[in-house]
Image 1 (cartoon, protein in one colour):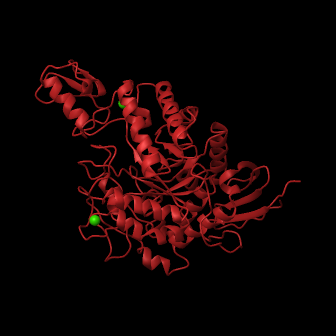
Image 2: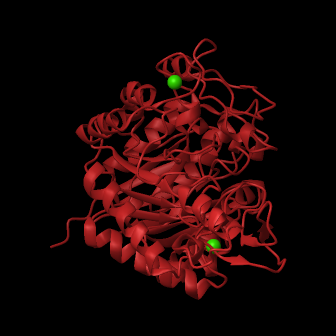
Image 3: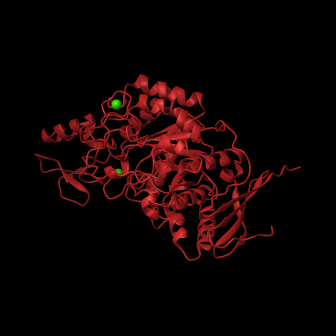
Length: 469
Ligand SMILES: [Ca+2]
Ligand SMILES: [Ca+2]
């Protein structure tokens, strides 16, 4: 006998109603690779514990009460390994943490505290490339300068003596090295080299077993090799490796591509690939909100996504550290109801929704990368220093402390959504069937074998709609 739970969730543009039940306190208990509410944190800009202006592990640890209160049950940390850059996507040592952020003991203490609260932690792992200052690259460069081409580190990268596209000149030589992200001091690793694979095995084992993180966010998966087939093959190798060490770890990949390409990458066995087609100004959510037939657009893309990704965990998001923030995408600087509605319809997608820090308080940031990564706004008096190169520091909405005191704030709305999803995991775990689709309203059924709910959305705040279900 199936135990059917029928829940009706209603989202109405600009009036913000979600069901009529109380939020349960406390986070749901998930294994790492289950669906959940994820929160992307840039440690540099989150919270500073020691007064140097740069966010750190102890600062983040001091904010776990907040993160738990908000109902985020997983955190993706942008790179924490030693690096010469502020963003740290160019790593110099894969088995350590950057001292700007604290010590490894500080990190382990943060991890313990997260785990005690049932919050999972995955870390960013950029293995497409290293920093030019990584000892592998400095040894390779020295060897080339000494014409010692047989040095093993030369084969950690891809060198050529002819100029070519996506190859950068090795200063003081006539040689070039492969660099897919040119200008950042980020030489591409030769992932076909068994010795590089062995290094990656050590790195993965170190973080999963010795340190105890719950998985990885894999950077730049489309740049590993020249073809999607090779990238899928590498990911398959990586996922087998990681799951062999920690079977329930979560691996999510950055595959910045169209839906069919993302679907292909799921064939690697990876848990998730970020759903880039749902994000940004032209993505499924914002384009639906801008459309004259928003409900049709929303349902069409939702069903297409589920069809393309029948097995893996869908990972939708509105923005991340590389994109403009949602308030700007929506022109919602003075319209928090619009931002709430966007968060609402995004979070009615199945899978693991990722929220970039500051989205829950309506931060803005666009144009250059540092502007997209500015200080979390706790209050006017509590912010980290801006990352180097940031030019705008505008905060159109109040900080965290003020929004926590306001039941009608964007922050409290985001919190409520997370707890609705914890209380009714079928929203995250189920699949979708259309019940009613008008141009501006829809009702969909989300179901698993033993649970279901109905999600009704009216995109038109001017015209109430009633459904017979
Ligand atoms: Ca600090
Ligand atoms: Ca590459």
